[in-house]
Length: 384
Image (cartoon, rainbow, N blue to C red; front, side, top):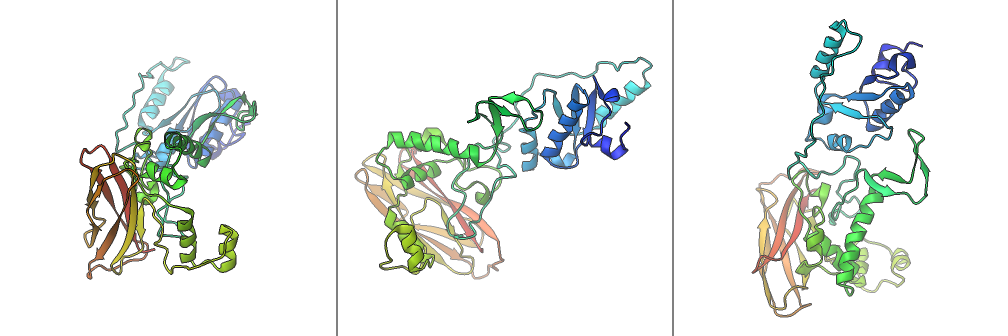
């Protein structure tokens, strides 16, 4: 059977002729998603090919695109190599040489060099294109996500001992999985480590430790990565924590205008006194929907570092028309587990013209006198 130009060009299912493909490396052009690339590879294998070169548009592989990272980290499950070519000029030249050569075989001009990693901190890591972003639609004054974790093509053992591979039909005891199925166990593992060091800490305290010691990413914004990449080595010794008790969550639900029945179904108790705002929480990050007027929130930190310690606040303002201030700007602790509160105030210039969905990010970092602890909180000012 002879396939049409388009079908063969994109290596569509059942398009390739085994008599022509068997034993050869096939060039397949990519015009869709990663699943299409895997399908191309599977089709080449079906037709007896020994290799596949997947060619895509240059913009598909641009390093400022999360899609490129998803492609470059993808795993092709058939037992033949797949290579993405950013510029097809070189390979076209090679084919022209083959076609003009009277020899039945092409000259071996291809060289596979020693691989090397060339990522810098500006290039890696990056949030996968499939991963959800903020803002939090139901509660925009809570910055989500908290912090990301490794979740793309993670090698893992399957719960089922032997699982048929969905593409090639091979049998394996392992798989490569992406998504929350992988990020959740990574974060849970780090949380378990922190909990083993501090068995008396609440879940909120553990979360605070993960967030305030995280490493802000260079690419994207806080709606993509929240507080940043988890720092396993720092998380067990954050210096300060933002803690919460069950009553804090109950007060927050009140501020979200849950009715008596809903409140009791969630908390198991009736509403007593309910505030009319949602600012009663004590979250490690700060998100404020205030681009039309001044506003403020209160946060309370607990000293879990040295008994006698002093922390100074460093502020990165979100935008030219916005000023964030902290009062007091210095916190002096005299004992472990001491709690101190501070107020974060935001002043918006009267000349600022608020636009729906605009957002600006800054940060507040509390640093002790030894610089051993740097307690980082992202600040998001938005008009959601």
